[in-house]
Length: 252
Image 1 (cartoon, rainbow, N blue to C red):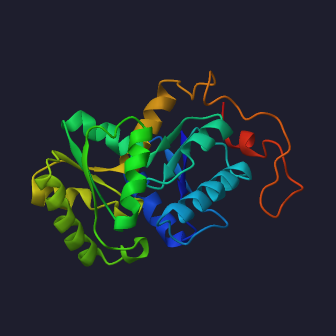
Image 2: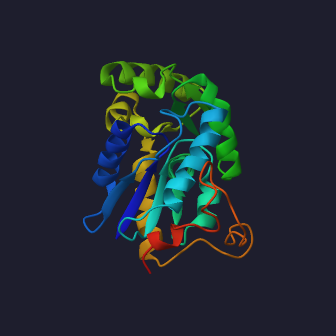
């Protein structure tokens, strides 16, 4: 089985970190490939970055010419684009936001999300509502750290713990890492706070594997029907239209 994990920004170092987390969660028969958009924001923090990132990720998948893959994991927490990607490719698409929330709902009645900057909280809340798992979320708390500041492990852990305590005090029985760049914190934080902590990257990889193994794919009846055939100009590349190269990316 081969899973493509898409970073939501252009920072290659973050893609590599996400891939390491994805490979740690993947089963022995799963190969993980990281995909970094060729253009877009260096970090996704806010509505403008998110919409730009969504288009960039879809463009990266549209023009993908690597080995065939069986599923896509979208590693942008709260970022836009998952519905469009489900129209675009013919394999299961799992977003780390909803994957983490769904697993959290299996572990406790209420969960909380700890993320980066406060400006991302409303966007994450909207994403959870759209995925149908917002009702069980008691709080989305920012650490005050930007995405590119998460490289400082000690500082990130301290800020996460402070925010996580606020979420727990608000009634969260389970915590969710609200950024792919936080992957790896879950074990340390769970031990210190005494509650389960779900990493979205790991959750999404395991759900993607399950969908593939069960032979399940995105429904084409209704909202996720294939895009209508028409000319589509992508950015400054008006010569390429239609569905692009996405259909080459899947196996089976």
